[in-house]
Each structure stands twice: as C-alpha cells, then as structure tokens.
Length: 325
Image (cartoon, rainbow, N blue to C red; front, side, top):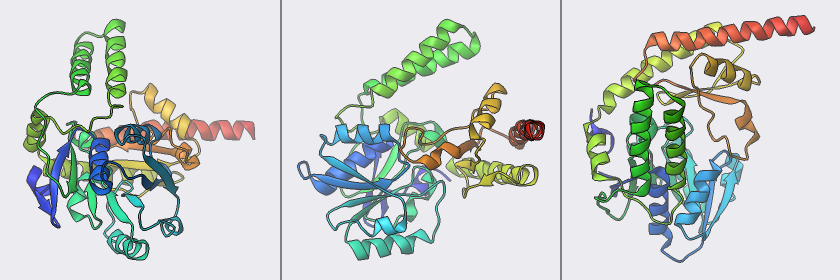
C-alpha cells in the first residue's frame, strides 16, 4: 500500500496538497480559510507545542490568537467565526466523527483535523480541512493537507532543507567515525535548521521529498509498527502494571508515570531514547508522559529491551522506597 492508497488526491471534494512541515500545511489552510487580512482565533489542544504555534504566528503575520481547549465543554464555547484545530491524540478513534459533526453543527466553527499523530488515517477526516506530517513516520519532509486550492511541489530548496541535509551528512560521518567535533557540528546544524523554520514563507514540499514519500511502503511500515506496539503493550502490562498505557496504535506507545524523569534517564543511559511530547507546552499533564518509538526499523527484541531496562528501574525504585520506609 503506497502513498496514494493512504493519501488520495481528492477526499470529500478537498484537494491533496503537500507541504514541507505540518505548520506550513496548517498556515496554508488558515490563510485559505480566512484570507490574507482577517484576524484568526484558533482553538488548539492545551498540550500543543508552543514553538510550533510561534512559527504559525510568524507565517500568518501575527494576526492569530490562540485559545486552548481542555475538555469537550471548552469546545462548545467556540464562536462561529473561530477555527478549531482538533487533535487526534496518538490514534484515530472512529467515534470522534460524530463528535466533530456535533461541534460543527452546534458552534458553526470551521474544523481542521490534526492527524500528525495518526497520519495514515487522514482520509477519514470529517471537518472542513485536514493535515498531517510524515516526518516522524517515514523521515521525509512532507506534510499532507486537504483543502480547496491546489499548490505544486517546490523545485528550489528552502534554507531549512539545505541545513537538514547537511545535518544528515554530519550524522552519517559521526556514526562512521565518532568524534566530539562531528557531534557538535551535527547538533549545531540541527539547531540552525530548526531556527530556519521560523520564517514568513509557507513552504511546499520539495519535489525530491515527494518522490521519496511516494516510494515509501506505508502499508508495511504500519504493519510492523502495529506488531511492535502490540508486543510492547503486552510486555509492559504484564511486567509493569503500575504504569498507565494511553491509547495508541502505530505511532508511539505513550505512558504516564510520576517517575517519568527517572525512567527516561535510565533508558537514555542504555541508549534507548523515548520522547517527551509537547515539552514546552503549558499543560501540567505533560510532566508525567513518555512516548516510546515503535518504528518499522525496530523488532520485537527491541521492544523487549525497553521493558527490561524499565523493569530494572522499577525494581531499584521499589528497593529505595522500602529502604526509606
């Protein structure tokens, strides 16, 4: 199952466009919806990344106001001229279709569905628009947006793309011949590429990245990710029942634990690198969340190693607790 199977050219009379990042896609949708001048009030999930919202504001000429939503009750406060960015939180739940339709009918607001954490389900969108990003799933700088207008892929590379490619070269050189100089170069180029995203231009996906995306086997990737996810859930539930596992399917296995930072530090020391999502958000709930990769690059043995390291940490914590008691 390739690119077009998951991302058809037209869905519900909306046209598929390809952008460099998810924020480029979101900015293009909002500009299309509101026009170049009208102020925009955008409702986002409380845990949305602040850095991403700042980049979005730059692209829209600082004419956007952000309102966080924490519950369904908050969603019913949205005004008819507002826009809701509805986040599919680490998986797509078909039951949300009815809820999205209800919100739209009761508020009159336009709804953009954010499938960044469920990218392969974007064709199931119900709102006026939809977007995702494929970077975390396939390592290509392509985001898909369904909107009214059509845009062509870019021929000229952005500064972000140039720096990203240089960073990849530095990383490859470091892995082949590790040195502090190459490591610092890779980190420097990574920082500079991130900074290069904070620009007013809305960047379409580069044609070479589009070609990479269209050559990628998304169906096989989803199959492997689902298998890794299911195996990790089974192991973690049996071995670490005190850790809460949040809903998911193929992007990340997200857990919640008050000992998040200790688990993360011990995993890092064993070269297992889980992610803290939305680390710069204003949501206190984020402080206890940890996200594990279930990438198609990994095997069931990798999932077993994750749980083995976490079990050792849990046992150490239990011993320390008994000693202190």
